[in-house]
Amino acid sequence: MPSPAFNPVIIIGGGLAGLSLALRLAERGIGATILSKSVLDEGSTRYAQGGIAAVLGEDDSFRAHIKDTIEAGGGLCDRRSVEFVVTNAPRAIRWLVERGVSFSRRGGRARREFHLAREGGHSHRRVIHAADATGAAVEVTLEQMVRKHPRIRLMENHIAIDLITSRRTAKRAAKRGAGKNRDCTGVYAYDLRRKRAIALPCAHLALATGGASKAYLYTSNPDTSTGDGIAMAWRAGCRVANMEFVQFHPTCLYHPHAKSFLISEAVRGEGGKLVHADGRRFMPKYDRRAELAPRDIVARAIDLEMKINGCDNVYLDISHRPASFIRRHFPTISARCRELGLDMTREPLPVVPAAHYTCGGVVTDLDGRTDIGNLYAIGETGCTGLHGANRLASNSLLECLVLAESCAARIAAGADAARKFAPPPQWDESRVTDPDERIVVAHNWDELRRCMWDYVGIVRTEKRLTRAARRIALLREEIRDFYGKFRISNDLIELRNLAQVAELIVRSAMSRKESRGLHSMRDHPKRSARAARATILSP
Image 1 (cartoon, rainbow, N blue to C red):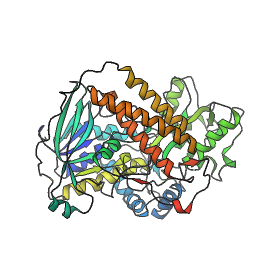
Image 2 (cartoon, one colour):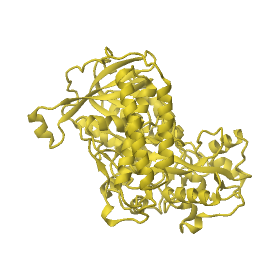
Image 3 (tube, helix red, strand yellow):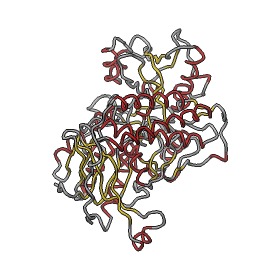
């Protein structure tokens, strides 16, 4: 087990990206410490319903998966990244199967063939899944392995505060190339149980903290999705890319007690229709693929239909399929709906779009390496260019798996994998006091998320973005003042990160004078050839 004083590798985040990276490293004989801000399974992975996209069917091909991904990405996907992830997908699935993940089979467990679902934007059935709770099945399996592994150390209920970096000497900087003049040497973390900050040194650090959809008032994500990794990397000196492309999932259950419960993409893949209260379908007039169009098209169509008709929601109806089929394919969704007094086998479900996935993130290569030495970002935290302007359904868990493997291989190949740095300075609280008005944090948290929802949502305008930029600037000033005077808390740490990520989203959105993928501008409704490039911001 790694020493508490020094860690060969620290992984921040306990979702699929973090767990699979830790296991991949352990298989290579390298110890890792996982920092999780809550209990290990309280990340976005657990709530992923649909599945993992991979070419597994005989009628499918890498070429088709690549084409679907690039088409969904609105012309901004990095083709090398797409080809890398797609071609490594079947091997990643085999790795999960070999570790005991029980995916759904055709005709039940006795059959050898996996049941493959089809989701929006896919030309073939290629989404391998565990009924409608794939994320939970994967998370539970890998978590059990991680908890038992002697090379993996867990530090639950620890939230990262900031990265620790050291400046390279001129000689070492020249060897690493221009711009890479810093190494990551550790992280400051806040122990939520002991209410104290600690310094954790390491040789390598991987950010696997997920996305930042909690920046919006309505989201399908758990409370942990506060953009921590993106914000910390930016403050440390890393570039970020494509932050304007925030994916809104089209179909979250609209119910006062549902807490943005997701209705899987696979429901539409198996024949679910989007309708109004009177049963009228509307998707065919927006796209030839109707309900199977990519998420950006479907979310915008729902948003527009709600505005045109003055309604609070639309409906997703799969009640025309046999009840046994619905319960077999969607046991988790149907059970949760029954708890809320809804029967999806007999009636349509009320749905609305909600912030779901951060397509942008920390700029990385295909091994997860960032602009800072020994610092990696994988999963939703990083941006390899795979998703472009819009993520294809079920490519997210896939990216976690593939990048975890390549990142582990890169760390293992590093000549300085065990090199220790000078101990970092301890956290200094000598000039701060206990906060006098904690309500300030709660008010700023609420105001920030409402501002993002109202002005930086599914459809944007230059006027709305300008308003958002002004308000976020004022909020960030208040947060900086509060952060500099008072002792930290988990709420303050997350608010500081969310405000930083919100500012990056707005800056990126203001710079893109067109409509493309998930970025829809009323002032600039058409796609521009001059804007066919990634939005990259530098600190």
